[in-house]
Image 1: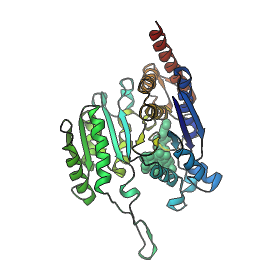
Image 2: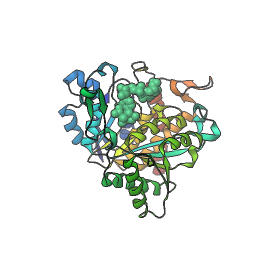
Image 3: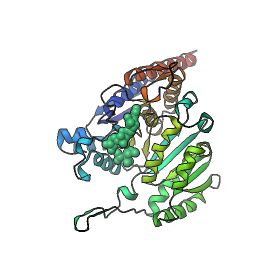
Amino acid sequence: MRLKVAVLPGDGIGPEVMKVATKVIRTLADISGFEFQSQEYPIGGAALDATGFPLPKTTLDACLDSDAVLLGAVGSAKFDSLPQNRRPEAGLLQLRIALGGFANLRPAMAYSSLTECSPLRAAIVAGADILFVRELLGGLYFGEPRGFDAATHSAFNTMRYSESEIERVARVAFEQARQRKSKVTSVDKANVLETSQLWRSVVKRVAQSYPDVALDHFYVDAFAMHLVTTPQRFDVVLTENLFGDILSDEAAAITGSLGMLPSASIGGAVNLYEPVHGSAPDIAGRNLANPLGAIASAAMMLRYTAALHREADEMETAIRSVLAQGYRTADIHRSPSEQQVSTTEMGSLVEEALTGAVIRRQAYHAV
Ligand code: NAD
Ligand code: IPM
Ligand code: MN
């Protein structure tokens, strides 16, 4: 089995966490016996500096010619004054459209050894395990018209959803729920927005094909409150693009840090895997970033692109085991009894735990 991956490190901590994540995958590939072929390409600010474009054609072509894309993060204040379609973030948005993954899976869970890390009380977060299914290619991010109107000193964006865009992402949420606790919570603003009224009616229609899955609906404002007061009651959370962007960062409070959260964008020609966090300019270049969200994104790549379910599980178990041993990057370090480690040290620890587990499994099967 061969996995050909375009790696896009991007900006800020992006290259730091990508270096670690690709090293972990390479080690796993070597001992597990699958071929991991990866090549790096520029995106975002790094690409703007090198080529003048946030998504150079060579990068896009390489992504379309790969089995999967693994991306670090984009964004730098240096480009804040550029027009929207030339900013680093535009490179990522253009890439998402080109790859076509409309369903952005963002799991957020409370790790049992990390509950003290959440600002929420342990009893509230313990056992919380949520999968956000964020619609990724529609809504305010891409609706036309958009722009500035100098004559009226105003600016405008358009929120637009078609039935088919809602239906396809809703199906992904119900399918995911079937493999979990069979519950979908749809989040919208149907008391105010027509797009949300359409959203709710399409989701209800799709639900009829999944009688075994329970469905409920929340308005986004109230949901934002329930997410941090009673996170354990949710399983799959289905929502539109901007609400999903905001709520998935809020969900970092359940896990303890934004640096922990992975994502997979599926449903298009080539799947895209990226941690939920951004380029974190406040800690970039200091070997401080938490690489676990990036490593967990690589695990999702093994699961959803390569169907290497056992290896994906082993990577996630390795993350859990390193946390259980008390190793913490700065963002999740809380008590003197835990050992603070750097980005690269955390990567090596996961690699060690993973190697040990795979070797034990191979020895067991060899007997
Ligand atoms: P951010 O996610 O970069 O950082 C928010 C906070 O979380 C910061 O305090 C940061 O230090 C911390 N943090 C984030 N990732 C971490 C990690 N792995 N380990 C430890 N701490 C971590 O969000 P921001 O500061 O609002 O945005 C910075 C830049 O990133 C902006 O240009 C923004 O557009 C961009 N951005 C990119 C992506 C992406 O590429 N997918 C996502 C979000 C933001
Ligand atoms: C994310 C980011 C992106 C988004 C930006 C950088 C375009 O915040 O992946 O969550 O808004 O989708
Ligand atoms: Mn975001």
